Image 1: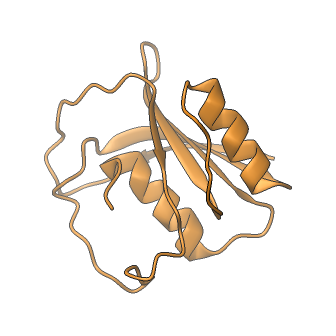
Image 2 (image 1 turned 45 degrees about the vertical axis):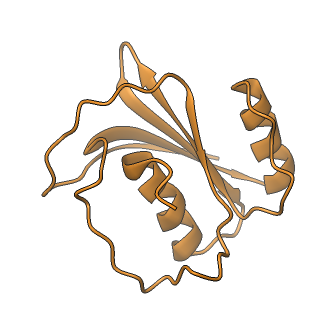
Length: 121
């Protein structure tokens, strides 16, 4: 299942940063991270991006496939989601999020934050 939407964040000044096929991913269940932690949008590298969200049966397998497709080594640790950011000549900023079929607001929000702030942790 794919859900594609155009998202625009407000408040921070749009920064002009060009990344070529930058993989943005993370270990969601970090001991230092809480779903209630506040954060600033001042470090956003973009405030406008097209997001595609794909829900998959085997998150580890699918994230490894996407990682390797982009020239990275995959994940040698357990993950709950992943995201990848690209600069497309026609669409502009494009972010691709993968989560399990059943996910949490925390996981989806965490991956979405990567779409705007890159590797923030």
